[in-house]
Amino acid sequence: MDLHLTAAQPTAEERAAVDAELGPPESGWDGGARQIATDGRAAFGGHESRSRRHLLLPVLHAIQERIGWISPGALNYASLRLDVAPAETHGVASFYAMFSLSPRPPVVAHVCDDIVCMARGAASMCSELERNLGPTGKPCADGRAVWLRSPCLGLCERAPAALITAAGENPRERVLAPAAAGAIEALVDDAVAGRLPAEIDVLSTERSLPQAGQPQLHLLHRIGDVDATSLEEYQLTGGYQALRRAFDLGPEGVIREVIESRLLGRGGAAFPTGKKWEALLLNKRPPHYVICNADESEPGTFKDRVVMEGDPFALLEGMTIAGLATGAEQGYIYIRGEYPFATERLRHAIRAARAGGFLGRDVLARGFDFDIELRRGAGAYICGEETALFNSIEGYRGEPRNKPPFPTQAGLFRQPTVVNNVETLVNIPEIILRGGAAYASIGTERSAGYRLFCLCGHVARPGVYEVPFGPTLRQMIDLAGGVAGNGRLQAILLGGAAGAFVAPKELDTPLTFEGTRAIGATLGSGVIMPLDDSVDLKPILLRIVAFFRDESCGQCVPCRIGAVRQEEALHRLIAGRPLGSIEKEIGALREMGQAMRDASICGLGQTASSALESALNRWSLFS
Image (spheres, rainbow, N blue to C red):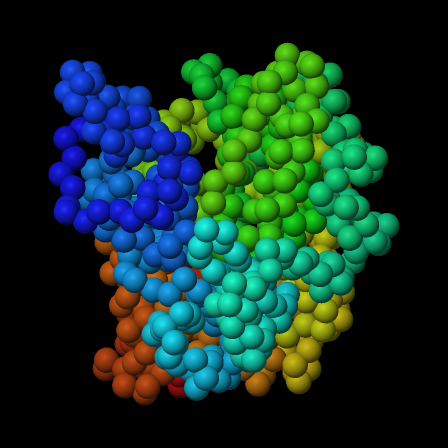
């Protein structure tokens, strides 16, 4: 490709960051030293060079982590190395919230002000940071650090939360939860002085998993009791026995067990997992891919993070069984960029599994090749949608694709692909060892197996809880110690920001797929967020609609325009200045919500009004 670059040049550090990811350039055509004797007489680039476009996201991460922002010169160099048009490179870099295309200090404090943190004092914490560090988005007085308001960081069981990043030759990241303004300022000072620790001791089992060590656990039984970094301890506690049994069963046998288990996807869509795998196996067009969707960005959700931090080998084993069952030789874990500790745990686990013969060529000497690559997102909620995730891995903007074709027909790199989330995959070893029929007997007739719930907000013991399907909402809140705050329950957000608010009179609703549908709600990502009556629901609703306005990829008109108009209407209602009457304004809101549900390309637009409309249906907030 004849690239038309701007005059901006990369610095030596920016070149080093890109070259560390891609290796040294081979010729003057891809950014190396000009060699007249060969460069003018030999062809470089072409299809081979463009086939590396999928490395664009890792390259942008490398620049951001080394410099703290991505300059025009760095974008030029990335374009040259990957043979991607500069306009497209810029379009990808500008898509993600974690990347900055304007100069900013190397130290950044990302401070969550999303719904759980709002209910846990984030507003006063941010006010104190404004007094001490200056306005959000503006460098501090010495220019060496900046703090930013952030959407949910996935640390909701220990809200409020913050993430401090320090760019440089040895970049550092550290989460802080629960956070306070003084503690954030101290960590920022440490980062500026080069003292931000590399070690990230974030997994507090007591806070993240209140059930740790209890005998009834199946999916979470290792967390807190077994060294998550030790492949040996994983095997001593039953690890990789399911993979060995899966080899004996063969692909058809594994899929038969998963179908018999009646396992439905735990990412929110609740599609039968076994049927999805079967469709991929029956597609004889190679290669096949298995993807773990670990881009857990739904506000209020953190269960997948706890699993990845506390039992990473279980996820790898589930993915490897999926690869065996579907005829795939390559897997990808797409993990959200705000999970540094989970990322490091998975990187270590992948290296250990390869060294132990559980990944790579000839897995367990059974003639099966399967490997896993970790890809890190960069702050885009929409990339949790499976086709947007494909585009992100491939080096494009994370915009959803039209379906059909469905992923099992044309997914990653337009090849047959199966996508499951973390919770779905960690159920697989349990199913293979227990047997599909036995697993199906757990829970209820239409909601089989175990489910992980994220209890956060005003509960006494927030954290991840594992139960068989079927307990009521009341029982789950009691399991978490009851309502905290002032103890007077006002509302429960069920399923996350894309879910629905339910009222205290609905506490006896069974937490099953069919039970929640009966009251017009959804299990979604497993969020249960009680709020006491000290919380003003109006700012909570405003934060939710602002989240969807900000996270819309902008590709389709109903979502791009509807999310903005929805937020504007809610602002008017809260200010007491509706267009016409309150009834007409609320009626227009409902019409916009219906238009988004009917015509948006993906689930983001289709659910962007769900929480707001559920609150309007259950409470008279503006009368």
